[in-house]
Amino acid sequence: MRKSFVVFFLVMLAVLSLAAGSARRKTRAASLRLPAVAINAIEHIDPERIRAHVRFLSDDLLEGRGTGQRGGDIAANYLATEFALDGLNPAGDAGGYMQKVPMVGVTALPETTFTLLPNKGQPMPLRLAEDFVVSNETQQPKSDIDAPIVYVGYGITAPEYSWDDYKGTDVRGKVLLMLVNEPPSDDPRFFKGKALTYYGRWTYKYQEAARRGAVGAILIHKTEMASYGWDVVRNSWSGEEAYLRENDGPKLAAASWIQLESARGLAAVAGMDLDRMISDASLREFHPVTLPIRLQAHVVSKIRPFDSNNVIAILPGSDPTLKSQAVIYTAHYDHLGIVPGQPGDNIYNGALDNATGCGILLEIAHAYATAGTKPARSILFASVTGEEKGLLGSEYLGKHPPIPAAKIVLDLNYDDVPPLGAPEETEVTGAERTSFYPEVESTARDFKLAIRPDARPEAGHYYRSDHFSLARVGIPSFSINEGVKYKGHDIAWGMRQAEDYTAKHYHQPSDEYHPSMDFTGDAAMTRFGFALGWKAASMQQEIGWVKGDEFEPAREKSIAAGQH
Ligand SMILES: [Zn+2]
Image 1 (cartoon, rainbow, N blue to C red):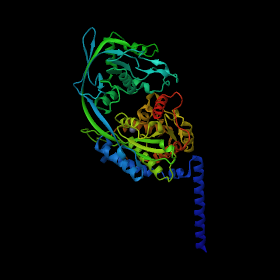
Image 2 (tube, helix red, strand yellow):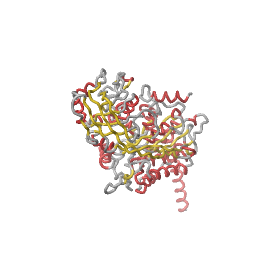
Image 3 (tube, rainbow, N blue to C red):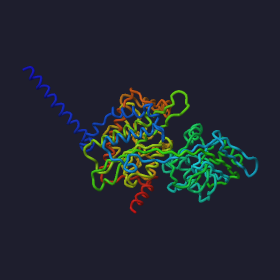
Image 4 (spheres, rainbow, N blue to C red):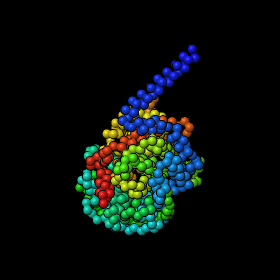
């Protein structure tokens, strides 16, 4: 009697908890506005699986996953193996998961010289590293330049802001002296106010100068304008610079920076005042000035060709028509490798940067692969190389996508997602530039995540991770990350964690795996990104850029190209 009562009681308990469970799932299902299979897949996303990937990928045996190095290649192989185990189709070269990315390393050697030759007066030699840094984008071992210097202000031509520093000046064969960043403004309609647009980035300035036929460009470094000090410029430009090997248009033989005080000296030799030159450049009427100085440069470089791989898989969509389109998930697997000869720990494990993103990418791939049903559109998974070398793997992917860029409706990127516990916020900077944003907002609400605005739009973070490479070819793109508010902590705590990481571990050998890491937040970002991708892959409408966005023309161009 008593025994049967216990059995009855246990059975009732089981029935009740099952009912509660299914009710819970149903309410969650309803509140997530996703089909049951997708909810089920979301519920199986497991922080401990992400941990396992991060632990392996950041092991010392992976040697810091350097681009084109053994550890990086092992990481790529691991990612491909995981894709294969999930039964995803290869989407790389020749029926494999690997997409070869041909690169070249260029190191300026000490015999490189820069000399300023004023029309009147003594030649003025500049010191490599102290006064200037330079890289030869043309990938030639030796280049000689002897050309007049033309000051072009910010070096920007932006019709949408009625801004043109060049004013039709012929700069072919010239060396252009220019400022970093963009004309200062608080007006959100003018270069987005304080926020940095792509026009403010040095990459744009070099490209625009080369496109106009200049042979060299000298960027004047000013800490407040660049948002980093001369030491950062000097350190990151003194070693090897890497480029894609393919020749896709004009390049500068001298892509260089000059230190502020040296620039002051240059201006003085020209009989000008640098502060005056800087303030003149903020006027719409600014006109390029040919300085009474020539630059004589002898750029000697070590050229090292090498290859690395992007790892790409695809899950074909279920709709016969829409499957030709895709949502893509990206995360870079490369990090800084080993620095030979550095005393102490010289392995840059990159646990957070970006083993976490790879773990999330693999868990998302696993969730799609095991969901049982596929969304209408296809899903691409790409773990890219060479991010730390200047977004090179994603640049190559954007130029050589497995399906045409016009047919990729959305890129969701993950880079450096901290294992700090349960987030109550998400950062999706750039999502607001796409027509998908209302869906992002409502999905964030469903997941009880507040959207945290970009804390420092003036630093231009949108232009510094892999989603940007895909935005450049028109694909609506953004990264998903946590904000700073975590469950059980205040915002100040989250801020401290972020500052501590940036100061002590970011791009340091100490960015290592610890068993105490809590991957709850990485799993939360995985679920959120899975839900967003599923919705984007299922909805009838296509996603585009908000009217007038700087990437809208690139989208229109790629769509037009697809129609021919
Ligand atoms: Zn990263």
